[in-house]
Length: 338
Image (tube, rainbow, N blue to C red; front, side, top):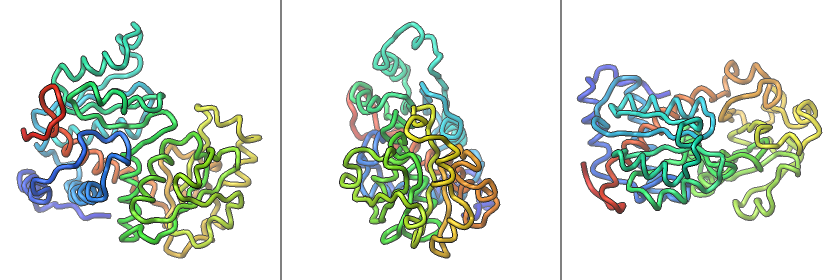
């Protein structure tokens, strides 16, 4: 865990972050997919997030004057809260909009709603939706930067970035490391982004799950190995990453029962010990205790990095908002400075 820069004033912390950024920008105006980011982009995000984390909950002014809209058309706790808190810690005016908003109930299209929010002067629109591909479609119609906070079964890029930071904080790199994901990859947008970032950054990904949870041709698309025997998948793993069964997306129909699934694929103390001695345990949350993993492993076990993921989420999401807020102006997306 990074030590806090307690001795620095807020202004000194801001100045340090500006020096680290060194006038660098992302190569993209939006982050709707890990595919939008180059390896250099990812290194920039991680470098700034590492310092951002050291500022703790200190109020900074890096986003003073910026307006950021959290347009969450689907329920969220961790992602929505961390984006909102990160924006406020950086001094932005944050506005929250949910799927129960008036425009949604009156039948307005997502495109019209998003264009309206951008017309109010929002620099960044953070969007979560049950529809895969919606952020990709909408980014073409607004000058505001779009951050995908989860779209259907597709992607969740900020989650993959905070997961990458969590792995690197412990191992130093994921190049050459073995990451074993266990669970429902078919319905998981977390898997969609994590698989992309691991491949991009040189890691090796294994998946342990029932074959009913395996999307067609996924092993070739992401260069992964599929295991139906969890014990074999865990041997030699440097990271054990558990995913929940996403019943709200219909995954319950792909397994006999949660009880049967837990017996075969739940992470227990004995199973975790099959991984490398220096392995860590991760989960994007919410954890379904004693189904996804044994309850005692969630926060008590020394290998668990579940709360580190939460903490890193604040740093990563604040970094994304800062890097994107000053990227767009006018009616087309063009690189500018505020």
